[in-house]
Every structure is written in C-alpha cells, then in structure tokens.
Image 1 (cartoon, rainbow, N blue to C red):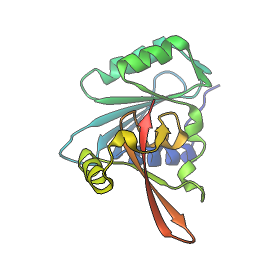
Image 2: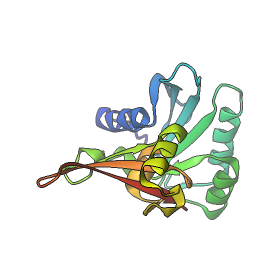
Image 3: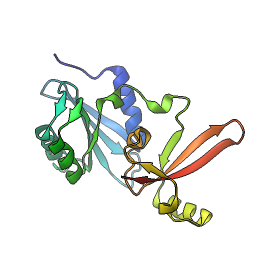
Length: 187
C-alpha cells in the first residue's frame, strides 16, 4: 500500500523546515513507493546551506540501506545536511551510523502534529554565537551554567538543536507578560 504525504503533513513539515531557517525549493516523489524527498535552501543568503529531507512512509523499520542511500544523496555535492523521517522505528545499526555520519533521524509523528501550535508550548529558538556571548556577558555565566534541555526533547528536536546549542524560550505569563529563559542543550 502506497502512502502519500498529505497536505496537512506537508504543512507541518514546511513549518518544521522554516523553524530551522530553510525554505523548500523542490518536492520530489521517489521512484520507490512511499519515498518523498524535499530539497531546501537556507534563508540566509550568506550561508548557502542546503538541506535534504527524505520521508519514508511505507517502511515500518528503517535500516542502514535506506540510511546509506540518504547519505549517498546528501554527499552527492548538492546538500550540506540531511534529515530522515519515517518508520515506526530505526534499527540500532541505522541509529549508530546516522550519528557517525551526521544525519538527523526523526520519527514520522513529527509529520502528525506541530507541537508549537499548542497553547502551552512556548516559542523556542537556537541562538547564534554572537547572541550567546551577549547572554553570557549579561548574566555573568557561561553557557554550561545555564539550565539544561535534552537534545531528545521534542521541542529541541523540532528546531534542530544539537548538544552545545543554547536555546531561547519565550513564554507568555499572566503576571510577568513576556518571560524569556535560556537552556543549554545536552546529549
């Protein structure tokens, strides 16, 4: 049975990619059933980063063969980063190799809901190095002294945070109005 990416799922995916600072340039339905590739480029023209998002909807368990095909496509010279979305689970070998080869693995539930649309989930943003230095100077603390957030946290995964990043979280508060906190991303 061939599963296609629905308009709703594509909308969630588009927002996920935009939160990471990319815009979609091309959508390619794969030759094999249930595979969709999304090509995106960085919105910052100075960086010229490119992103490959490969979506696998028909395979319940994603193994190293699919991962290696994704790595091969990324390393073809056209893409700087790769995200693989799909399956109910990833094999141990696929998870290990993805970590070694710097490919981000996301569960397909990220195509089912945009958690940032929920009232209780605040806005999350990854800070630049310049912004981090300003925060460290303002608070007199190093990034390692900030409260922690796990890289596996759903909000951190959705924005593409990696260990070592600093995340700014903006919350609405009845008493304080706007409240901003910072979290240091750990493995």
